[in-house]
Image (cartoon, rainbow, N blue to C red; front, side, top):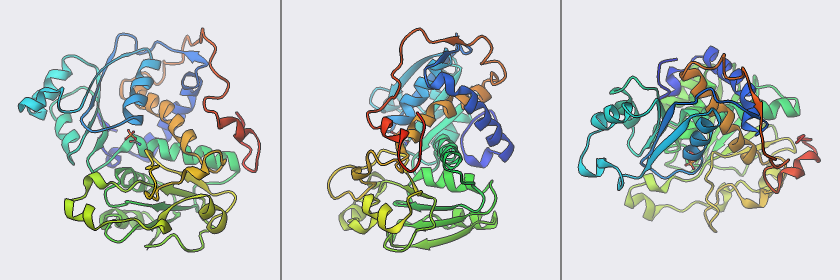
Length: 351
Ligand code: CP
């Protein structure tokens, strides 16, 4: 891998396997059992010029749990870009302050442009409708863990990606990442006009995957192992598109869909945020508490995966677990109120 994490294009299968191995070793730290100070003295610049909860906070948390500290800026209003400063100048200036940078920006290619002006590692936290490589890595890490738990394997699996596949950068990165793996079946379901870009489908097919496109969820998906839903990215629509668009309830991934169209072992994932407002027809909140809903296990996995990204970019993946200490406080046994439900039921998640 290069000095930056800008696109899944820069990743090899060997690197991803290594990263996941490092992430597994990070789990006791991510799960608040152990403490490391391996990045003590290092500073992360967390630059978010577009809304974020998970990516911004989980990178912040990951760097902090490695012993580093974080300075951040959110939105253009409080950045000197509002005064016309270029990405080049901003990048060079911030590189003198920090040791790693995470950046989210609304323009396609902007994070790569920013990274071209610095030798400090830059991680793409989302560039408009482009890519979100760390999300794809934590998604695949989650799929592997879920499959391990329920005795499935990635080769030959059937993944269904649905929602806004045109503007959803997480699915762009995920489809590219899956191209590094043995053949599987990938079904793409989107409303008309929001289909996956052709070149990404082409790449998946050239990698040996069987890809089919559909425009409805009202079909038999009983052999699907993972349903990966995405939010409609209306903020990337033109005004004309916003006015002409409404998402049919047929696209809602809800309890009835999983019960009637999928199987008892189908996992439901989503990069989040899901749009929980009435009529949004996104991943439905009626699945809360259902063990098939993996979205919070998915967000939890963001910490060890992002810690592993920092560790590999900053050269501490072999040393971080020397001298680990026990935490000095009492963490909750289960983080969320629904998590205890996963200790029983057909999927048998343990703790
Ligand atoms: N999945 C994701 O990128 O979430 P945020 O927009 O909250 O960072």
